[in-house]
Structure formats: structure tokens, C-alpha cells
Image (cartoon, rainbow, N blue to C red; front, side, top):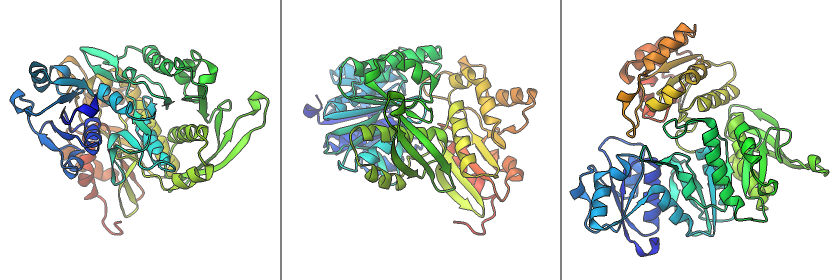
Length: 487
């Protein structure tokens, strides 16, 4: 279908997923433009660099007359967006983001979907960079604004396509079908299964059922080779595995029973190091030691995901030595434990963590990397629905920092905040009633500095966290850190 279409318009083009689709389509030789609000987005610079035109309007008459295909997502009214409705009136073809992604996947010989409620962006980035060992350039679609100095979307000439497979709904509340059920990959790497997106799923069990349905799309193809890679440390993933044929999946992780087992895990301020063992003992054979791997990533959760990416490549008979060399130069995606600045002996990082499990994983990684330092978090909750559904879990996770500064909730364009009786101030008050006093409410980003200043010490590690625009507050922090020895 895409071969016959040349002019494509993307509604909500500044979203990270849509921006990367725009880049991929542009690299395919399509003429791409789109619409969004005039607000500053993290993708603005890349869209400008790629010379992709953005219209700051959703009015129907701004839809270019030459348009042959309109692409939309759940944002900005979804299927009810005025430009989407106008396209239908004109008889222009309309596709959801997930449908377009599957069309792109069909252009490749091999497609690898990375799914999971946490960690899929870093894991997809890892796979994309490791695949360049033998295939250059590989195609990829990653849910972030950039990887190092490269865009997070690329259309390569090789036969492989690596992409994030999102479990979120197509167009809630009208259509809550999980997006990844529109995909038909050749391989699946699943980092974990957890309860996120309470506006789509009612329980962990319902989330698990969606993932099992996705996994069975691989099983139904009856491949001879193992095609699904699951984390042995994740309880829900292992429950899902019980519903699959044993020959269709391979497990990885720290668990003793994992097919690919992590051992000898250590961390310093620059690298994590671990050994990978192919577990044959439980099958009557001998363990195979693949040796030591070194990577500039931190925390047991993310190292588990790295092991998953390696397991998939080892299943393809990739060279262990080549993988080891490539891992040491890995460039992580934007907003994933991203180093921002060091001033004196104070480090500033930014992270996309927006779920309690992600907050805890990032905190654990920071404490492993920076022992005996104070960890200060500036957290901006993302969506009223998630904050309300996981209120207790958020309080427990945020309490694990030495001090947390809680900004107002960043709302989603998909929800009506008037429907929720929850606020960041409510979270802090509830924490204080529980005797948790290391969480402070900050009424606005502009007031952050005055609240934080007394807590910043010479050895502090400061982390901005959240899926909204919290990354913009870093300049407000730096003026309270002594500038001598700035790097």
C-alpha cells in the first residue's frame, strides 16, 4: 500500500512516536507534513532538522489538498480530530499509527517487536544498535526523541525492522483495543508485564491476557526456532509462559532457572558488568559460559533487559565478541537515565520514569551507581488516571528517595481532569499522614529552586522524572549548585 502513496499528513506529528514515523516515511522518499499545537516539544529540533513541515492548527481547511494518506493516534481527539474527519469527507485514506507501523514492518524480511510495560525503549535502542553489527543500516522505530546524536526513527536498506510494540489502546475511550494486536512480528522480546494504563485495563490479569494474545500470534505461525524472549524474573511473564508451548519461547534473567542466566553482576560509576550463562544443567547438559559483558547502563531491571537483547542475537548466532565490543559503546535513548550536567560533585540526570515500578528501578540503579550519595527526585506525575489508580504505589516508590519534590500532575490530552479527584498535593498530604515526610509538594516549576536549595549537598544526585515536560526544569536547579569545577 505504501508504495503507491507519496504525500502523507500526520496529525499530532510532534509526539515522539509520530515524529519518528514521519522521519521513517521521509527517508522512504515520501513527502511528509503534519499538524500539532504550537507548544514546545522535545521533538521540535529533529523535525526541523529533517525539514518536515508542521502546521500549528487542527482546522479542517488546513489539511493540504495533495494529501493521499492521513495518519492519527489517540492524541488530539483521535479518530474524531477535525482533520481526520475532513480526510474521510474528501475520500482520503486514513490509518491509525499502529496500522501504519504494521505496513512498514511488512516491507521487511524480519520484524522484531519489543513489548513490555517498562524498559522497552532502552531495549529497542539496544537491539537496533547491536543489529548494526552485521546489517547497516537497520530499520527501527523507538519511542523517544533521539538516540545519542541520531533520530529514533530510521528506514534502512537491510531486511530487519526493530520496533516498540505498545500495549496502550488504539483510540480510548472509543476503541481500547491494544495497539500491539495490530502487529504481526517474526520475533517478540518482552521486558515485563505490569498494571499500567488504568484507562485501558481493569487489572493485572487483563493486561496479562492482552500480552498472551500477542504472544500467541507468534505461536500460531509454528516456527521451528524459538521466537519469543521472556524475562524469567518477571512473575506475570512467567505466568503468561505457562499458556505457551515450551518450544516457542526462551527465558533470560537473574533467576536460576532462566535459559540465559545472569551471574557476577557488578556496578561502578561508569559501567555495569555481568556474565551470561546458557543454562543446560536443568536439561541434562552442561552450562555454557558466554563470558563477561560490559555496558554503560545501570540497575538490575535494565541489565535484565540487556540480557534479553543479547539472548535474541545469540539465538541468531551473532558473534559473542562483536556483541561485547558493541555494548561498551552503547548510546542510550533520550530521557532514560540521561546525564545532563555535573557541577562540582553534584550530578544532574533526567529520566522518563512515570510508573511506580519505573521510579523504583531508576532509584535502585542510581544507588548502585552512586553509593553513599543523597538522591533527590523532582517528580511530575503523568495523567490523573494513573496517579489515582496507583496512588499508594507512588507514595511508596517516591519515599525511597532521600527527598522527593512533587510537581503538579501533567495531564494527558486524552483525559478530562475534572473526572478525577486527585492532585499532587493530595499525594503529599496522604504521605505525611503515614509519617512519610521526605516528600514535598511544589506548586509550580518556577518555585522549585527555593524549595530545593537547602537540600542540595556537595554529593547530591538530582534526577528529574516523569513523562511530561519536567526535563525543562534542569536550568532552574543549576543556579543553586556552586559553579566551581563545572564540567
